[in-house]
Length: 435
Image 1 (cartoon, rainbow, N blue to C red):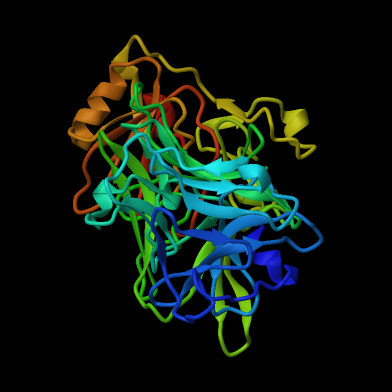
Image 2: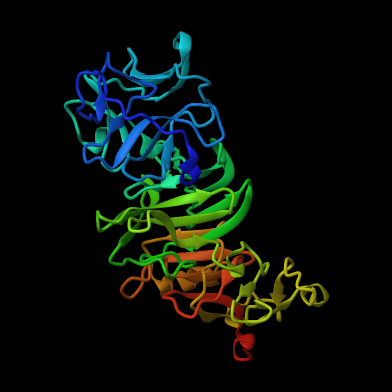
C-alpha cells in the first residue's frame, strides 16, 4: 500500500517543460507532457504527481504523493495493474481531450475515459490531491470531465467520497495494494453497499474478496451505529449523503495543518486512519478497524449479540436461545440463536416489540427504508408484515425520523456501553414480560 513506499526509488524533482525555468506547475495543456522524472505540484505544494517505482519492484507507475513528507506516501496510482517496465513513460493530453499515459512506441498504457471533450482541455493537480480534467475556462467542480477522486486507489483523502454515484452507476471504493511492490487492486476493499431498487439501508463494509469482513453499521444521522466513536470533533467533520442521485460517506479536515488520511492496509488487514506527526517524522495510527473480536463480521451468528465485556463474548439476544447448545458451548457460534417462543404473526394481538438500546444495528442486506414516515407508522408497518423482525428510526437527530425495517434473521449485532439508537425487535407479547 502507499504508506509503505518509504523504500521507493527517489524521484528527481526536475523542472517541468523547460530546463531553463524552475517554476513548479500544477497543470498541463495540449501539446505539453510530463516525462519520467518530471512532476506536477499542486499550487500550495502539498501534493505531487509523477513517476515512481515501488520498493523492490523495477516497474514504473504514475502516482500522486505528499510532496513534503520524507516518507514517500503514494495516495493514488493511475496505471495500478499495468506498469511500465522502463523510463519511456509520458503523460499527455490526446487529440480527443483525454489524459493518456504512453510508453515506448506511443503504446497507450492508461487513459481517462471522458466522453465529453473540452474546447480548451486542462489537466490540473488540485491542493486536495485530486487530479482533474476540465475546460481551462471552467473551474466549477460540477463540470469536471474526469477526476481521480472518482477512481480511488487505497487511500481516502479529505473531501473524497466513498459510496455510489447512482446516476452513473459509479462506485467510489477503496482497494488495498496487492503487496508493497504491487499497487494493483488487492482483495481487501472498503465501500458502501445498498440495493437502490429495493430501498435497502446503505452501509459501509470492508470485504476480503467476496466475504464480508467488517461492517460499520448504518448511518443514523450523526454517525455509524457500529462506530459510535466516529463523531464530529475539532479535527474531523464526518458526513453522509443519501438521495436519489448519490449515496456516500465523506469527511473533511477542519485544521489544514493536520495531515491525515484513511488507508487500506493489505498486510495487516486493517482500515487505518493515519496522522502525520511532524515532530517525530512518522505516520501514526489514530485508529484502526477492526478494533476487537466483536468487529469480526457475524461472529455470533443469527440473532446473537457480541458483548466485549462478557465471557464468552457471544450471547443470545434476550428472548432467544442457542440453536445448538452443544455447538454453542464449544464456542462455535456460527449457527446463532433462535426464538424461545415462535411468533404468532397472523394474530397481531399476540405479537409485540421489545426495545433494545445501544446496539450496532443488524446487517441491512434484507431491509427496507423510508425516510418520510415516523416511528409509530414504522411500527404499524412492521407489525402488519409477518416477515418484519425489527424496526427503528433511520435518523436519530432531534426526536428521530424515518423508518428502517429488517426481514429475517438479525445478523452482526454488538452491544455498546452507550449510543443514540434503539432497536425494536418483534417478539411474542407473552414473552416480552419474561425477559
